[in-house]
Image (tube, rainbow, N blue to C red; front, side, top):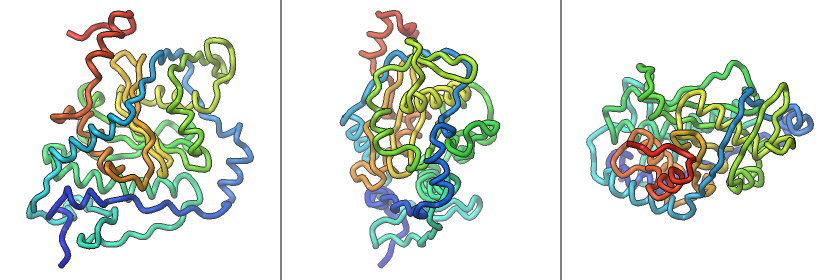
Length: 312
């Protein structure tokens, strides 16, 4: 006997692990971008950035996600179809054989657009459907591609979780930027280096970006700079960075001087899964009960140091 995902959403998500990304071996696009690695360096906006604290949430992140999922994801039948007939959104990530999830086949990825097809059609669509079921009032919130006037669009793509029918500061603050670089550009090693940085202070002058000591920014620093630029431009503090194969979840403080980041999560990870973490992060951005908030101790210490202003 098969079940719908909505008959036990918590059970479905427990085993909903992302399909392994298939890459076209040594495609012309991959070879071109590897060979011209300097030309694929991320362009940064002409401004000064002072990201003075990058705080690792370490293994506590997994506990936060698992506890939130257990508390907020239904484990009973909801009497709903898996597919929303009006919007067409549905569950696409395969789970336990007891759940009847139609198979979705995508071609092997040969460029960043194909990688983003995998990202959009598997995790983002599934999470969007689950979130709308859990929180019906968010039916107008969805993932959309984020256009950046062609700047690095061939090496750095963004999706934006936001209210499709609204545009005001409260909505921006609750929105989430999902940024993607293909795995042949953002390697596992580069993403690990990204998570190991403790601060990034950079000055952009002309066509070059330097740190405060005058050295050119390295790849890991440019990644932080690009994320900072994107999130500040959209005034959206919550972000996700992924190559599809690996994932990092983070948020910036109110003054954009501190960032909190999760450990790296593999696409095939369990307890929590990527689906779990995405649901938790979207819920946190929208201030859902039990979501992530900036630790009081950290906020207080930064206030005493004059890094941020105390909240009232």
